[in-house]
Amino acid sequence: MMPEVTIQIGGRDFDVSCQEGEESYLHAAAKMLDDEAQVLANQIGRMPEARMLLMAGLMLADKTAAVEDRVREVEDELAAAKAELERLKAAPKPEPERIEVPVIPDDVTDTLAELAARAEALAAEIEEKAEG
Image 1 (tube, rainbow, N blue to C red):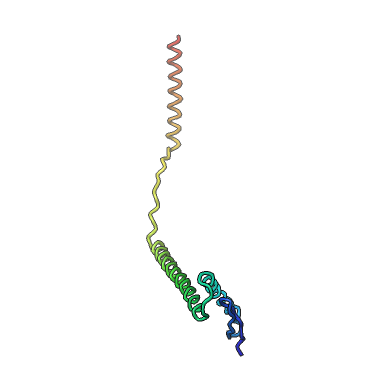
Image 2: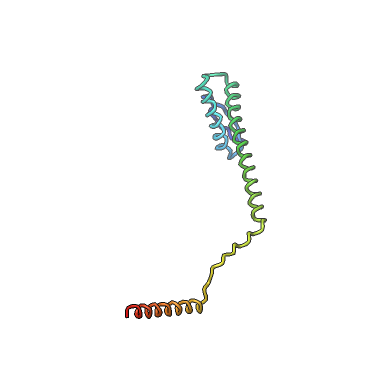
């Protein structure tokens, strides 16, 4: 036997049957419909039950359609991002950039130091001769 659940929509009680264990889902769905019915009641006031249910259902369907449209947009964006990722994965790796750093061999450095020492010695010799 299916459980009977009383739900309230637009201030009116409705007895509804549902599958065993589905009661919480039914209450959640009824709450969504009731929220829309409350918006209608606040805007328009009391109306016949059938019209209230129809209008609340249409408002809820409109919100659902907008959410479904956004989901499709996000799915399209995700598919495009996945395609771009696959394209980047499949692309050849860029050639490593070659950077040349000049290296001065030790013997050149030693020779330059020796030349600098000789130049200083010659400069000192010239200064001595100039003073003397």
